[in-house]
Length: 226
Image (cartoon, rainbow, N blue to C red; front, side, top):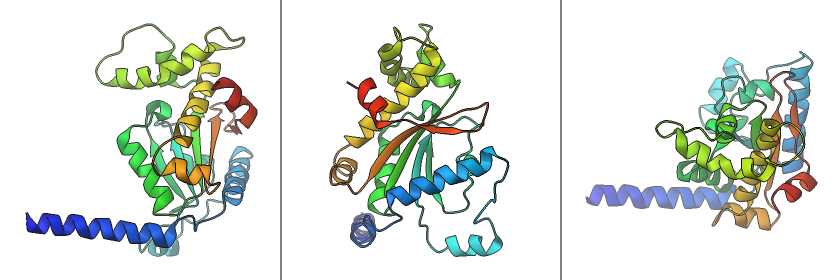
């Protein structure tokens, strides 16, 4: 028991010291976003350079990680984040669940990326034809724990069910927007950094047919989350 208490105290002290040392010390959000935009453009045009994937890079990141952005994305196998943004080892801190639904473990991981690793940009990344969002748009019952995903996404579907355009496309975008706002309000860590202007949280949707990542405007996020 004493050993467990000692280890717990040690971990708390270690993480606290890292938070103090690295907090908000990473790549500025504007620069991080530009890297992602440029990387996706390379990918879309078939000009990926596949950076930071050398043997030297493997050795470099084995000692520590310094990701420049956190991606909260969907588990869909067709949206591998490092590939669509043309990044390499140690560049992105990634969390992926179906429909990019976040829960306690995800929130803790996101907080870690910001408070400990010094990430200044979070991108919530949805994608077209998302199966999880599609399931939430239907009244059909789903089995097992899948219901936790669809229940989390249903508010987005409700927001847009009377909106012009494709129901699924609208729901995918609304789901991302609601998740962005939810993260901006996440206490105690994320909201503090965001409200101080030390953290940027944006939303985007990946187009499965073109490979293009389209970022949501702030006006859209505001309008859909009223």
